[in-house]
Figure 1 (cartoon, rainbow, N blue to C red):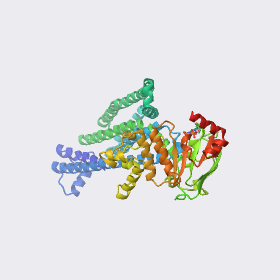
Figure 2: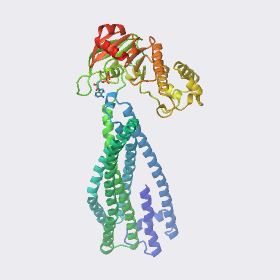
Figure 3: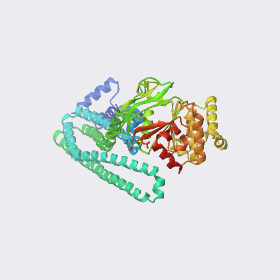
Length: 563
Ligand code: ADP
């Protein structure tokens, strides 16, 4: 509509010139008769003033369409952006854990930030391509109605110019793929740098690592420069080529076809507009191709995520009465050898069970199977004799608490960290204060100016390691859990915190079911049952004293730790 109204306002130059120059209505263009009919129909005298008035009307209408054009474009872009972002985030969130561990973190991060921006740019450019193609069609269509022969000559010229740009377009596309891949690699390297900052700094390896990062940056920039060169070629060659075509067309129009001054001017105006739009089509298309790599990456990545989606069908889990059983469980990552090999065991409700064994023996994998994070390759997890896989897995996991040495602290207030963003009403506040007292963080809250609303910062920087551990316990206590999984710290916590955690766990003993991945054997003396895992197999099981008697391996482990 915008281009049509624009073309209409330009067309008004024909009667304007005719009236001004006194060419009269019997001139060679068929269009001027149409104008006279329109003037008659509107009951207007064909004077300069009335033509100017109609022109003004069309230009105002054009402004209105322009408004809707820009506004609608913003709406469409924002809708598109929201949609792909939420699509990607939900695909990542619903991903199976087993797939997640195989992903490159840099790819994930780059996908949800830089790549999304690129796709958004691609969308804008694509809309612009479509819009400008419509503009071209409207201007060319109207010009065709005015002068078919001339129009065909110009169209052929425009079509031929395409071949000149084709190879440039192709190289833009492949460069764009390679830039996306390099960017993924860079994000991953930077993430690892941040994660391992302390190590790299303290061992003076930062410089070597920085060289590695810089090499990737150089690779990217090299590609960016080549891509820029290609864009520059397309942009700079385009206008002279078009001008040559246009000059040839004008030459033919004036010398071969002939026509009145007014119709030549108007057709040139149409073509001026059409070429402007055609240039925009090519420009936007080149810009679009720059981002194609991101779109292809997005498509591939989301397809990959979707193929490993965790389903949530099945019964809702309400809690269990008797036990959780592992029945002849085996597990292997990919095609590798078995990491867990035929493990069967029984975890009675409200008992404490500890896994011990050498590093790499399979303790973490077993616990991951227990949470439904990994599906056993063979065997079955049963909860009250019902298959775990028949439950909607999130309803089961909502009854699980998890405490590990890597404390989970979100950059938010203490209250939100403990309650996981529950509404701050009286009941929730009371429950919060109760658990804060249980984990001995009351002092911390009292001393804080904002009390429970104290901001904890990135990774809980305002808290000590011990306080963060306490916060982790508080969060699990606040949640109504049935099964607590404790991945004991391998690195030493301060002995007071360690003792405290031990006491907290002991105080929960008998109230909920606890599974501990134990590294320090002294902490599991009171466990109801200790399971010794060796190379993915259950080697022996019993309480502390029983195991000391029956398992020389365990006895040896204990004597080594007591040294
Ligand atoms: P533990 O907790 O007893 O130290 P894990 O359960 O973490 O042992 O690991 C058991 C074995 O599985 C190890 O040999 C380890 O190399 C392997 N493993 C762990 N995670 C993966 C993974 N994502 N891909 C492939 N192998 C893995």
